[in-house]
Amino acid sequence: MLIAEAVDTLITLGWALLAWLAVAAAVASIILLAAIALGWWAIRGLWRAARRPTSRARLAARRARSRYSEAA
Image 1 (cartoon, helix red, strand yellow):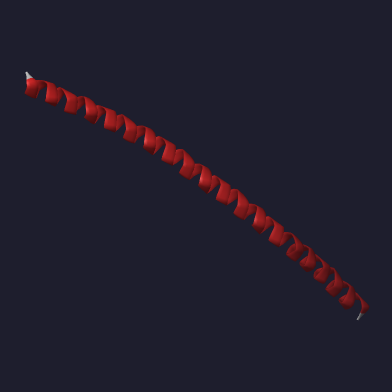
Image 2: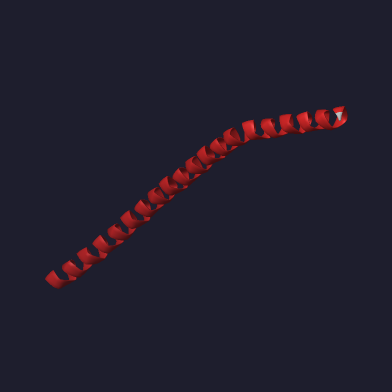
């Protein structure tokens, strides 16, 4: 009787451990995906902010070149 109860307890504890592992994996996945999404959003924002002045400067340089070639 005592051995059967010990085996039953081990099986129950095994299932409980498996459930905790599944919950922990789901929470870790959500946190990881949220961190990736937040990082992607931040990098995209920085990239767009960095490109705006550059593209404006390029546009101004093109306009200045076209004015110069028209004047020459």
